[in-house]
Image (cartoon, rainbow, N blue to C red; front, top):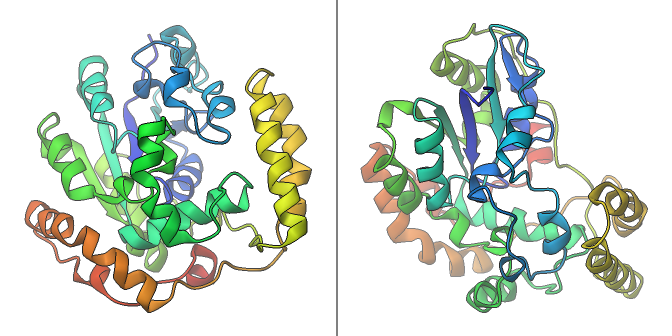
Length: 317
């Protein structure tokens, strides 16, 4: 029976792809393809349509691995003696996933990556905007729409604010898993000191350190402006995603790729979040940040600043 020894559990848009790609380079580790099987979010049943009502959600849900036998097959190719793992960044947010992981792989080691929650939310919105799925061109308005979208059955990736409340998420996780089975990694350390950050991950897993000195670039595609042409492209992408919900996932991924490429300007970067915009959101996270500080015994006061830290591409250049 092939099951994971470790899981990268979150958070979305906090560097899980970079960590996954760095871990793939380590000869003592085996990572799944696809990167995000989402198995522990499913309860071993097909995702319900009523929880996948946002643009593109139903199509994406067809890619979730929900049958246990299919999930176990993802690890069949792992060389003997390697540690097996996968990276689904929604597990940190999903409390039911905590319990499912505990039941099936109680000794698994968990890696949680956390990022300034406002920066994370902005990156999350920008990701969906540049993929042509987000309909709201104003980030703050999109955040205000979150409760309505949740009630309407949008998938977890649309929860721009909720996904960044790590204090509550980790409190619930530590009620299910012993603290020593969880490694919490800060996104800023991953960018500023990648070799040290990854060595801490490798030491936590019990494999050799010194194997990774840099983090491969990821999720650094160009920005998509709000223009009439792009508005038409976005409409086409969203309509196609609806049709794609009834087609093999690989077929729609192939069809949408040139549309998304046309939407973006190569080499461009998303606009910086203004201080006044950031200030409106920081207060929404203040209590959760205080909870996180008490939980981890570490200061996160830099997350309360009026300025963001910029994109991955700019910070790592």
